Amino acid sequence: MRTYLVLLGPPGAGKGTQAALLSQRLGVPHVSSGDLFRDHIRGKTDLGKLADGYISCGQLVPDEVTIAMIRERLSRTDAQGGALLDGFPRTPAQAEALGRLTQELGGDVRAVVYLRVPESVLVGRLTGRWTCRAQGHVYHERNHPPKTAGVCDLDGSELIQRDDDKEETVLRRLGVYRAQTELLIEHYRGAGLLVEIDGSQPEAEVTASMMAALKGRLE
Ligand code: AP5
Ligand code: MG
Image (cartoon, rainbow, N blue to C red; front, side, top):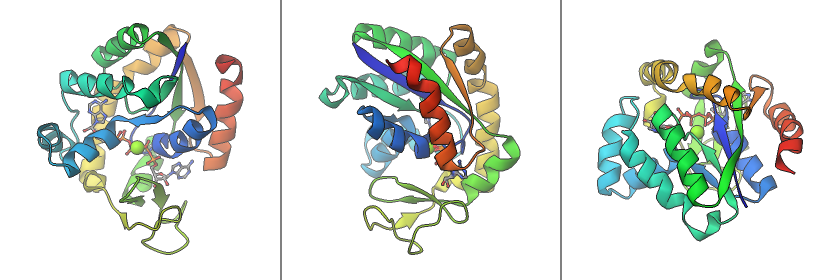
């Protein structure tokens, strides 16, 4: 039976940071809708060109193309055991599609980890973020600096800042999250799937809290 886990939370909550660790420990691939869109943008595909217009101004990419992209990703052979989803679903239509898709693939959503972080902390996290060009490893100029400025500790590639991490775009992304995504918290709480974690703790403590909370659900 395939196991799917979802990481839910506002921009800057630490989804990407925690997903990298969690996917290694669980042995399922990390599937980030944002990273998939950024791969398409770099590859200058038709989907990349479409997505770029939305991402650069902090809006959501339309459901239909987002769902099709995730469907294709979850059907690949490395996701035969399931996947850890980061940034998907983000709307009620995407949540409904994920329920259908996981059933079709012979699995289910085992838990939805909600990383709760106060909004006052998020802007500083995003405007101070540096990401590695090669594989998207995540750093922060104060909270998690690389050993050598501008260079990824893990693969030596250049660290860059995301275009949508400018303060103005970050504020727009937070507004979009409140308007379109936040309601999924109650949806998944009602379904008995929500695992709520204090995401404002240091990284290692967030990981430990998540692992402890997920233990019973993943057996
Ligand atoms: P996406 O790439 O998913 O961005 P996001 O959801 O806005 O989230 P972020 O990646 O900005 O934050 P994160 O939670 O991963 O935090 P991170 O670990 O990096 O989406 C980008 C865009 O793509 C969207 O705006 C939209 O346009 C489009 N899109 C994506 N999915 C879509 C969908 N499903 N539907 C439609 N459109 C979609 O951490 C942030 C910083 O904080 C880092 O610097 C990190 O080092 C630091 N940090 C992390 N944890 C801690 C900690 N515990 N303490 C201190 N600092 C920490
Ligand atoms: Mg991310």
